[in-house]
Image (cartoon, rainbow, N blue to C red; front, side, top):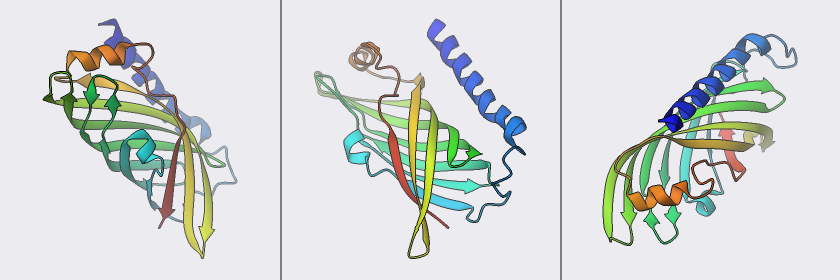
Length: 193
């Protein structure tokens, strides 16, 4: 029960911080024009094979400060001596741009997960809800007048809800600090249009 309260409080706190920045930073950065040159973008991570998380993300820029994020993902994450997840997910998020390429974002991933428990040679189907906070830097560049970007982000994520997860997976996740995802820098490559 304490874990759920902590996760809920942390989620509410960070979400409020992201939205509160609208008030404090909305007019403070004069170097950023109000209307973005390109309102749409699509990106993916070339790191996907190393992380076993494959995602395509679409972003819509309302203005130079606020982006809506939509996407799809497939996660096939191995758990040593336990099994593997096979999760298909949607992605819903918000990105707050502070200027000079620096941003923060919050994303929720509702997913259908098909856990394979190798010790029992059995599949367990369930619903998971994952959430992730990211701080990042986007570098924009052009190749032959086509606008590309590289987005490097530091993530911090954890599960909000998990249904029908085998006990062996729960035990593995509770070992050490495996509950939270924060150990890797995520790099996405994208195109604007």
